[in-house]
Image 1 (cartoon, rainbow, N blue to C red):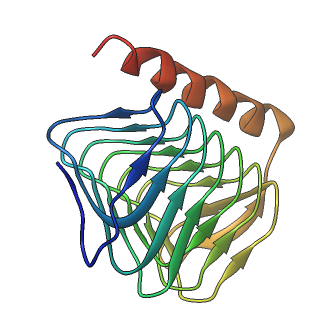
Image 2: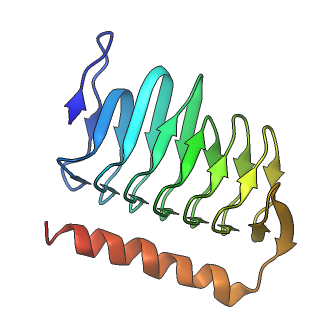
Length: 162
């Protein structure tokens, strides 16, 4: 479902895939070759949501904000993740059921592990791995972030089948 709210309707690039079982409302912009899978929600009723190119928002994810939520290019937001008012860089993997709270910022080439919680206003530097509750920052090996592009591209290709 794509729905206007208060005179603002989602703007979805023609190459993006939006599942009929997802819900986008309000001031949402979705970039080229990005995808929203079943059960995903982008609710921009109090602020804007911006999703870059070649980014996938997998099943049952929630995007919401009180101000601005930004997700970069080549980002994988895995099943059940919640992003609330955060900024996510490029080439990032947000693991299954991870949570990013208001004002947190994730740099480029990062992995947020499954179930990790990034607390409010935490800044994650480029090329970091975050694991645990609350999330602890660890350095990343280059081969780890090089694989993120594969998963982002794989979802873009898979979306063309639907």
